[in-house]
Image 1 (cartoon, helix red, strand yellow):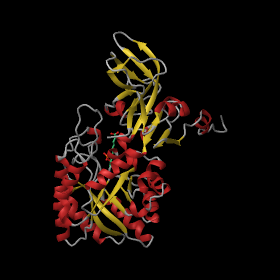
Image 2: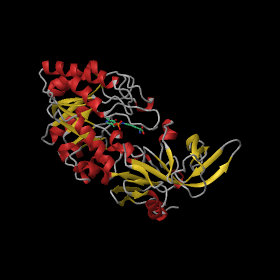
Image 3: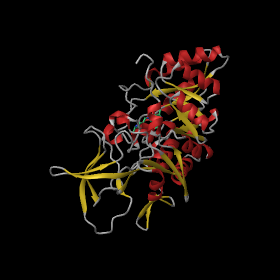
Length: 421
Ligand code: LLP
């Protein structure tokens, strides 16, 4: 459930009519609902309530400082994958003691930055990273808290570009080699082994791969303890899917996800960390756009809107489906037409939907792309010199711009023409 509902035929974000935001901010823009973020976080907290746990929001899904602050104020930790994300989490007021650092290619300067800040945990993905981290930590007189990310060779049954748990993917240390790498870690002067980490992919709509992966982690944990390691934390990654199409998708419920965690690793007595991004933020945001033209093609009708693939990349990048709804609800029984919904960017790939049923629409009409709160604004670019799309946060009956649209001057001012030209 989210808080983007029609009241008197007008789509609202919580109690704010979306046309009111459109009038103030202009389109396109992202708008997020605080109540939805809070609700989704709460569902996960409830699902894990019987175990000691920390929910580390995956900053990559939505890195806006205001969004991070909403979650941080609830007690959330953060999962970051770059120095920039680490600094975003800190700037939103989240203490380092609740931040975990994931990623296959952390640079030495990023490792140092996080060590200086006193980070909770590094999820280390390779031997070279482990050795470098030990060297840097030891040179600072520290021991870096480490979980090794293992690759359990489990098929997450999701889109190939976001599956990470198969042995052919670049992620993690092959689980068969894990014990040897833990032995090396324990012998390094700058490393303190604290746990095991796994993440098998994103937008999982089937619970079975989670169970398979977590059972493998449980088995490994027992073996590592027998080898003499102290394993007090299990980071089980993110990946819980969300319904993108209201009609036909039924991803696992958080309660069932919690149960799988309890059944597979609960008896080990570890603190459980999870790294959800999409589950918390995905349905907490929509992208609002206006129709520029209705263009009649050869046997097709194109709805040309003022949002494009640079603002919401998921359809062009993954062929992803986003429900598209009119901001002014169609009268019941009104005839729907079939539209190709496209942006202004000069690529055929700039297509949000083909032959999508929508009520009659024309110039200036507002529409909303649902489920755009995760991997929406964060993946936006200024391709075609389109200024970065702004973001708005709603709480109850008020809203605030949480990232303004850059002016053309700001956009152009970032370039420099060398003196010799
Ligand atoms: N932890 C790690 C180590 C990850 O790599 C990811 C996502 C997450 C947590 C969060 O996963 P989530 O709970 O959001 O599924 N741009 C793609 C998604 C890429 C996901 C990358 N890693 C999309 O738009 O679908």
